[in-house]
Image (tube, rainbow, N blue to C red; front, side, top):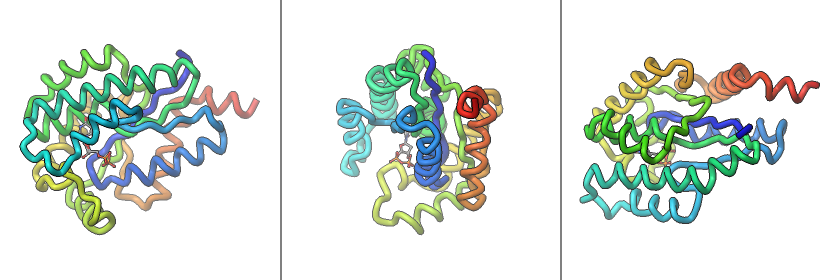
Length: 217
Ligand code: TYD
């Protein structure tokens, strides 16, 4: 498989959506339709239906393990229908969240245990990890303030969790980053957006120099 698999992670309010939109535009200007954006959970109709269940504001009684299994199920379907075919076609895949989200949100945030969540996800991902994970780090209060300021009308069920939940999620991400420094690169998302984007793009450049060398030949 000669594609590139890059996941984007971060606590809510890190600015992931804005950052990814610009990085996608910039890479597309260079590599055209080789660049593919996809999001977790979702990306195909089965996974999108699972997403609806997960984010339905009515489902306040959802059990934590049910939630974790649904994320893992959506992930599996997304891998089979989007990621693997994309990699086989040589795409540069920008994936909005992947397995680290489940470890941080369900494992740590919902206290289901990071190891247990890793186990169920191993079954789902069957060894497929991104070559690069961009972790957009933001202090929890700042992240939550950004959500309150920018998308007051779109706060979803998971956004409503209290500050301690977000802090726990962030700590888990930081731990993951320390444990996997080769795969997971931390970017300071409290910087102005243009600086965050520059950092992300130079990280991609450093990780895949062959992509950019090919272009200048
Ligand atoms: P989404 O609408 O994609 O927003 P964002 O721009 O913040 O990514 O919502 C994603 C939410 O789903 C976010 O609160 C994190 C949560 N999530 C999990 O709890 N576990 C997971 O495995 C994934 C993929 C997402």
